[in-house]
Length: 70
Image: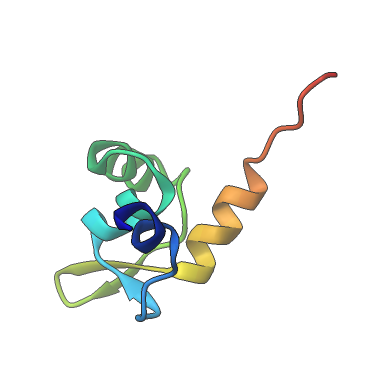
């Protein structure tokens, strides 16, 4: 039951850093590092808050998909 809940898309369009990291399966530190290097998903700043849109996270994952060589 918990697994099914985890695989469904959140009800909001924007996620905070922890939620975004969980959504794409990486650590918060990875997102922080990618943001500083400008190599990660697009980020939105709302005041001091850092937010990620679900569509940007999905696009980032699609852009970094690798096919196997088989």
